[in-house]
Length: 488
Ligand code: HEM
Image (cartoon, protein in one colour):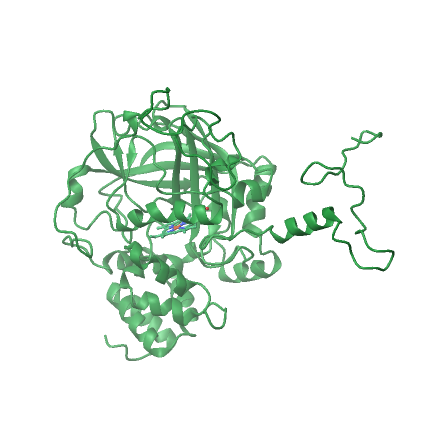
């Protein structure tokens, strides 16, 4: 403080800064002196302000809130935050677009990310979801290629519809998600007016060691609302941070967005005999077979105080599951279990869980990890740093052990085992047929407008997929593009 009681400016080392306007030079017009250590520190810090943006989902917005259990799920899972009606668990959510860079416009046609970090008493549980219940591919092996095809052309640095449709036309399993993407839901009104879906199947395990399969659905209480193509284009130009602003301002106004949380539950043994492979993330489970069961409410009621500290530095991972929740053999989920912590060690550093938004809030962290870049806590002080030990170090907790499960077959590079209705076209066709006349017309216009700029051989290959899903679907897009012969 100075004599008037004002905060005074200090360097990174706490040293008072005498002049923050003029650098130290040799005379009025002489060169700048190396001994102006404050100038050097200030520039050097500024030079390092940017960290790598997320390889996908780079543009996003986040908020804090809570989950409230509205049903006791103890019969199905021992996860503590899902038991005891009325129990509240604090959480952080980050919404995002997928393909664009950190500075890209919010109102683009793209899936949206919906990542939730529950700060449970058994550690952080992350549900890293999208606003669509399915995904473009079913094996993590294809993810880097898929993303390359959606991002910018390596030569022109411009988004390239040839690349996007080339990949999709060679990957017919993408058809279901492509249909959703080009439907009205491809451009949500904002982050408050969209749903979240785990897409993946997870295993829930109760206290008796019994397991079921679940998929999560977060349904917006604000109602799903979307933007028209015209509004989205206009807003992208006028107000590229429209969704980011909407989330922040609604919470500031006290209009707290909320979602009702449901699960679909499949008995464990049914997975092997169900009509299609239930672990395939390109498919939804029909609600008629597995109805939605309400389990709770998610409410967002607090904005971050600092975007970089709390949103940009947040790190989610599908590998973060708590006792009572385990993995399924979904091949995409299995790949994601590796990818997220790996990218976060690169993006934020090995001690990224010490960043407050990422550290558990309702349980201490006890382990033997030590050191590493940016170890900014007490690094375990003088406590023992190896195990086993005879110095009262933390010991294993049997509640963290997952249940055993059987596997069969030979290790090999293999697609999923086919069930009777495993096919890339049935669910995409069903979705098309469910749309109203106007929705179908908009879907067809949206697709045709994009395909207009795509090479003819790619268009023909893709038209065949639409046709196989539904004759009308393929024929109408072909007619709009003026393509007569696409081999069907
Ligand atoms: C094998 C397939 C996938 C891989 C390898 C993968 C990889 C990644 C990576 C590396 C990031 C950046 C994370 C960061 O920098 O912190 C990310 C972000 C994200 N991914 Fe995936 N992803 C895959 C599939 C999916 C699927 C299927 C979904 C949704 C169901 C999804 C939802 C998200 C979300 C919501 C984010 C943003 C998280 C945040 O807000 O920080 N991803 N993904």
